[in-house]
Image (cartoon, rainbow, N blue to C red):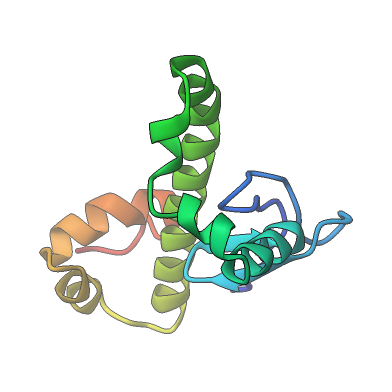
Amino acid sequence: MAITREGKICSFCATPGGPGTDVLLVGGLGAQVCSTCVDDFHATIHDEEAMAHTRTFPWERMSDAEVLAVLPQIMASAEQNQAFAREWVDLLRDRKVSWAEIGRTLGVSRQAAWERFARKTGDNGATA
């Protein structure tokens, strides 16, 4: 099973990127970041005045309309992370890792792990 960056978005600005686009994405464990955000973060880290703005959360400076406008991006990032978790479970199942072990790792029963991931991963024939 290949886990790719194809069809992914930057977890910070929601810009679509990856293969077939002009937007380079890097990262791991679900979070993807585009090169523009990396550059912006680098500039911020090296600017004391800009760093002072990071002491508060961005939504504290946003209007209700601005917060509403960002909500779809938050949901897209969350959905991307959920899909990434399913890809990792697929990878583990391809490696013959049991539902019991996956459940134990997630702090749930094997049945709970199976119910959450089996129907979404194409592992419908596996029993919990």
